[in-house]
Image (cartoon, rainbow, N blue to C red; front, side):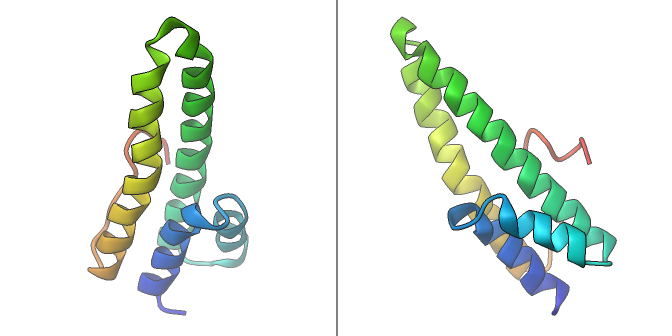
Length: 101
């Protein structure tokens, strides 16, 4: 499979299998770029789930509502940006977790 389409699938997996697909690509791919993107996608989803959970706990204090909105939008928009960048064959790192890997 072409690296470009593998990256598109990894980014798009945020909408249908945000944990399974990146893990499978990380385990089965021998390409370092694919491994890096899959780990970033997996870490990004994990961090966003944690942030959304914490924000939902903070709804009691009103501050959680805007945080839920921002993190919810990020969970949708960031993978879409990754898909567009992958289709353009451009290197792209996820925000928040991009420098961890």
